[in-house]
Image (cartoon, rainbow, N blue to C red; front, side):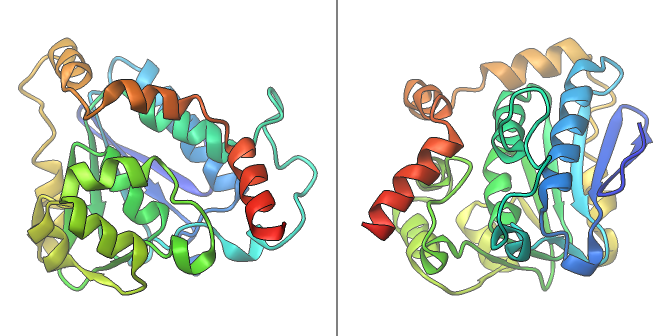
Amino acid sequence: MGRETVLEARAGFVLTLCLNRPAQKNAFNTVQWRELRDAMREAKADDSVRVVLITGAGGAFSAGQDLSEMAQAPAAGGSSASTGAHPFGEFLDELCAFDKPLIAAVNGVAVGIGLTILLHCDFAYVAEGVRLRAPFVTLGVVPEAAASHLLPFVVGWRNAIELLYGDGWLSAERAVQIGLANQLCAPAELMAVAMEEGFDDLDAPVLRVTNVDVPLPYADNLEKLALIKVDDVIEAAKKVCYR
């Protein structure tokens, strides 16, 4: 199925999903949330796909949510036709339930979901010169994708506080140092290094079972967090901010 904001390419058992809004530094609008949700849903169901690699077009990974769309009133048709829910929440459901190895090749600026998606990836590779940022406090919004829960376990409590409370940029070197990414790569070698983790020599069922069985910290609490609806969080935030 052809998509405009998420491009697909196959190399053996590896499916590459390339975020494709380069003029907006791959910031997510409603269409891109929906298309990435659908692409991951299809990849999960396709037994010929063993590994998914996510990267970005135009020298950027993702600048996060498209704030120009966020500032507008919800457009007609912006929600899922099937459930009425915004595709952002449905994308997070697919991301959390994804049971195949997920690799990120961070080739440029990574803000918001561009950073927090790394917490759900099995491998994350960053190019030299990349900068990452989690500006949730600055924007007055709650960190998404269970970031406030997962980040302390991935990078340590104090590093998580620095990322979530601060307003500064995280360098690629620092991202590797604190464990947010696996390896620092020369920009020209990033995709080749990431593709080396294609797992072509392993059976798909082995990969899937291993991926599912790797325990997440406080998994029971994470399951409870997954039941929280995005719309409920938004309404709660409005009550706090505007009371």
